[in-house]
Image (cartoon, rainbow, N blue to C red; front, side, top):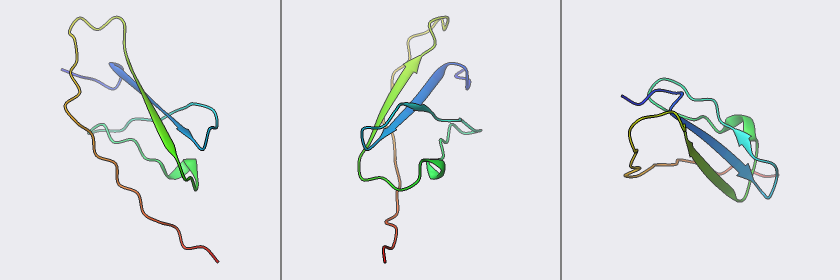
Length: 69
């Protein structure tokens, strides 16, 4: 079983610093606290103490444009 401790997910927006995303039940990683961004990169790290190899079969990212004045 995969737990929140098994994976750590980080995001980097507009060439800023890597920030660890706080996971929640269902492994959702809210991006609201990152603010507005044009580019985003993700880093997924596997916990070295996990005994089974994980396979990422896909991911889904939903973003919505912000209205500008």
